[in-house]
Amino acid sequence: MSGRKSLRQMSWAELKRMSWAEFRQSGGWAEFRKMNRAEVMQLDMMPAWYATRERRRWLAGAGILSLALQWLNAAVSWAVEPDGGGGWIILALVAITMVVYLPAVTLMNIATRGLVELAERHLDERQVGERLRATTIAHRITTGLLAACFVAAVTAGMGGGDDYAVPERTVIMLTVALAMTHFVLPLIVSTWRLPDPLPDDEE
Image (cartoon, rainbow, N blue to C red; front, side, top):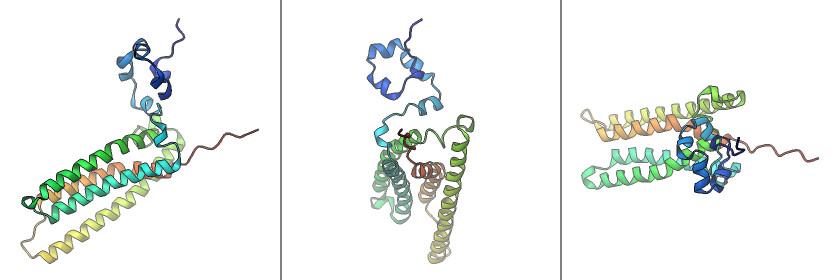
């Protein structure tokens, strides 16, 4: 029997050091695709991006920025007519949002070891408790945003007269912004709260 490790037994640092021939001998992409989400989350990919609490908070800040851009997009779609160049502004904001959002969410999921993403059976008791706290905080923030949206809609309706209506594109953008906030805010909160590991005791 060979003493060679399988891909599932390797760290991300070991995978990066492998040659293409070694990768193929260890099973290649076929073996890599067999790994479940929980195993992928343990690979510790690109640790320099989230090795310290400060860097994790920068990641959380990037997540907040992507949400803020989507909320700004909803406001722009409300205030600017598409024929007046608003359509291009909206598309540009969507593109910028995705450029920030996708890598930030991926790295936050890895940094938290799938705390929000994975099913509960893959988490230990501490992680389950932390996910509950993060979800509670995120729920309070989302409730505040919903209240603010309600107040803004009522205020705009009262000032716009009986024939005033919120544009359909604005409703779509607000729905997307609320959905993103609902799904990503617990991850942002858990990344922000995640402490550095305790240092090893020195004898």
